[in-house]
Length: 273
Image (cartoon, helix red, strand yellow):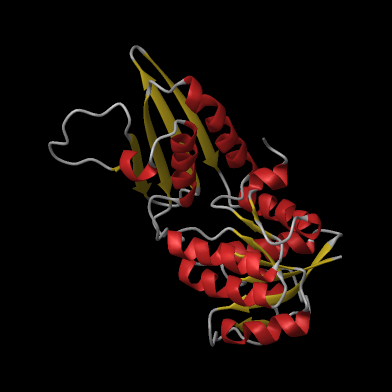
């Protein structure tokens, strides 16, 4: 049985993850963590998620280390916000707990900290900007397309709900990084984020990245390869947050046999090239 701690336990993703874990025969929720000094402390995580009592009380993150030492999870799942997730990863890894992280918006410095904590504490980890199975096939397809369409203009468009705090999305940035790497272009030099005014002629090397925010869009990502007289569009659309949760379940199952001291990707989880 894989024992799982879930942060952001009362949020949309956290509650969904708890519900899905409760349906699995090989895993169980042993800890549910919320924001510091949460008014939900002491409430049953299962009741909060709408599935009946689990016998697991929600605790505030100020007691994270204490909670992890008492519940002894094999893996902690984090879908929160970047600055909080960095501290959560630091604490979890120091307690010898593997992590599955779908939080986005990490700065380069924050990601370096995450990797260092995983490495220094020799624990298994999966950190991905998008846990959806289909979107990771999308990334893998981009790796194959980009070298074939190197002389096409490339534009990335992402759309999310009006509550999303970071832009561009982590998924869009991963797509951008995949393409830039395959084309041996410096991401610092070729990224163009939105356009306004007299921007001049588009360069052959630039990769445009654009963000749309509105309504309850779960997550749409389109990469356009535009040539003279033709274009190819590769698109992934998430219709429900369940697609991310399905990926989380696969990542949780991957952790017990994952290599320790390294950050794995969903490519590793799914066995993609």
